[in-house]
Length: 265
Image (tube, rainbow, N blue to C red; front, side, top):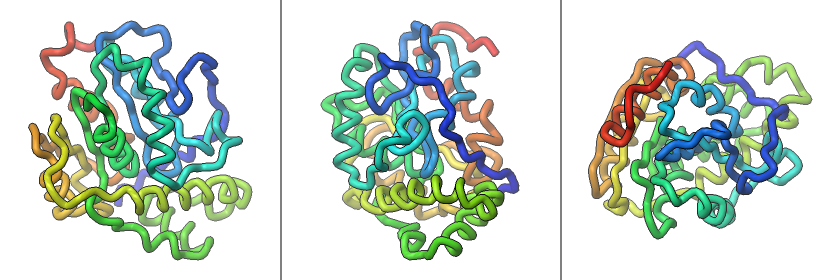
């Protein structure tokens, strides 16, 4: 597992009153030709993708899904029923569909992104699944049965979360209900073990990720009935943080021909 510890994204954030419920604009004012919708990992909020904004090509507007229960939606109960979440996101996306969409979902976010893509009348131009376990199996459901102390230790070891969470009771009280709800959500986001997604799909993952294995990669390949690409990056489960620029470059490469000119850095 990579030694980097995932930052716990706090509740302090900017609220955009005109943003659709469930989506947070991270490049407000940018007028691009494409819209990238980012789906955070378990326990995270939209600001997990905040640092992507300045590095993305000027033709790409960035929005991130804001799950209930975090950041400016901290007053809401987290959702653990997939259909309830999808029912929120479909109308949130409606005003954004006048431009082609790209979905990027990391870990739990990959499963949410696939579920939403399959629920839309028109799938996204490109679906990018990042470090997500098999869409056919609930691989990490055993975490749901762990008591508080054991779950904290497992998250800090296996997931790479900041170990200060163990000694910070207030932060743990805030964070654990989110992670439990997200784990329950993930365990219910299961798909038929057959080809079922017909639009372009790409799989991104870290070469040292201990939370996914070869079978996970094969299962994502199996569900894709259309164009499928696979890209490997240095790092572990949170390679999207340690290799942010390389990941964004990978996104740009997938969209080659859709972007007007090289991205300004």
